[in-house]
Length: 508
Image 1 (cartoon, one colour):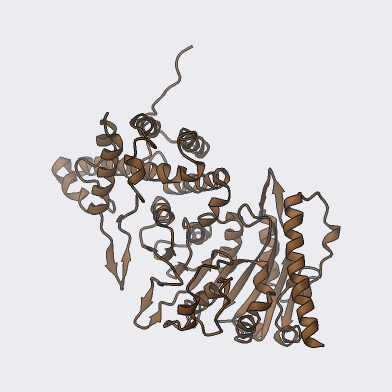
Image 2 (cartoon, rainbow, N blue to C red):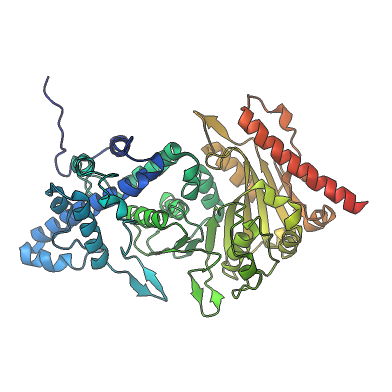
C-alpha cells in the first residue's frame, strides 16, 4: 500500500475538522514529556509562528506578481507583521542542533521587528512578548531537540496561509484548541477558558455595535472579546472599526489572547499584562478609561488581593464600599461599573451565585442595587463554570436603562436551560434564544422571568437570590447527580441557609 501523503500542496484548503485533528495530534506529542497544563506554552507559539510565516510568504508572493522582487521587498516592510531575515519558519526548520535556542532567537527577532503603535494614549497591536515565556524551549531536559524538531515537522506538513485557512477558520481552530487544553489540563484551565456558549449569550444581550469600544478586564485567552466580534460578523455588520481592550494577569495567557485576536483577523487591539485591581492598565488622567461594552468572568472569590489599597482607591472604584478580604468579587464588579461609559455603557459579568446573597457583602450589594445600575440578573444551570459544578449567574449593568426598567431589576431563572452531554454542560441555541427573548420581553414569564421593583428587594434586605423572586422546585428536575455535584450543591444550600438564619435573627 502506498504511503499516505505527508505534506500538503501549497494553497490546498484545509477543512476545519482536519485542522482540529492536526493541532490536537501535535499537542499530544508532548504527552509524557511535560504536564498537560504546559501544552499551551509550546503549541500556541508554534501555531502562531507557522501562521505568520506562511501568511508573510503568501503576501510576499503577491507583491512579486505585482511588481517583482525589489517591489516586493519594499512592500513587505509595510506589512502588519514583518518577518526579519533569518527569523522565518523555514530558517528554524533547517537547524539540526540547539533547535530550541534557534527558535527563541527567531521569536525575539520577530517581537523586536514588530513594535506596537501608540494611538490615542494606548499601544495598539505589536508583538512584544507575544511568544510568551521562552525558558522552556532551551531546557533540553524538558524539551530535547528531537521533540522540538518533531513538532516543527508536524506543523510543516500544512500550509497555514490565508488561502488554505481563512481567518475565521483559523480562529475556530484556535478556540477548539483552547477548549481541548482546558479539558486535558483540568482545573488549571480556569485562568484562561470560559464556557463559550455562555459568552455567546452575554454578547447577544450586550449587542455590541460597529465602532464601539469593547473591554474585558480579566480577559484570559481573549474568548469574550472574539465572541463580540463574532456577533458583529454574524449580523453582517462591519467589525473592523471596533476597538478592543483587555487586561490579564498571567503572562502566558495574555500572550495567548493577543495571538487569538491576531489569528481572528483583529488588528486594532490593546492587551496588557497586569493586575487589574492593583494596576488598571487603561486610564485617562486621574480617571479610568470608559468603554461602551464591558464583559468579564473575573476570578471568583479570591482572597489574596490588596484590600487596603482598594479601600483607599485613587480611581474611586470603591464607591459602593470595600469588599471583605476573603472575597474580591465586588472589587471586580465595581471596577467594571467604573469602566462603563457614562451614557451608553453596559456590561455583563459571569459570577458564582454566592455574590447574590452572602452576608459579608450585604452593604456593598445594597449600595449597588440602590444605584439602579443593575438591569438584569440571570441565573444559569450547574457545571457552566469550567470544571466546577457550581451554579453561575450573569449580572447585567446598564447606564442607560429604559424608563420601564427604572428602579427595577429583571430576574431570569434559567437553571433548567442547560444541556449536559459527554460530561460537558453548555447552552444550546434554543436556550440562548429563550433567555434573550425573555430579557427583551415586556411581560413576566411564569417560573422563568420576572420584573422586580427595588422596593421589594429592599424588603428582602437586598438579598438578590433568584429563588426569592422566581421559585422553581428543583426536586422535579430529572436525572442523576454525582456525589461531587451533590456535595457542592449542599454547600451552596447550606450557605444560603446560614444567611437566611442570620437575617431572621437580626429581624427578631
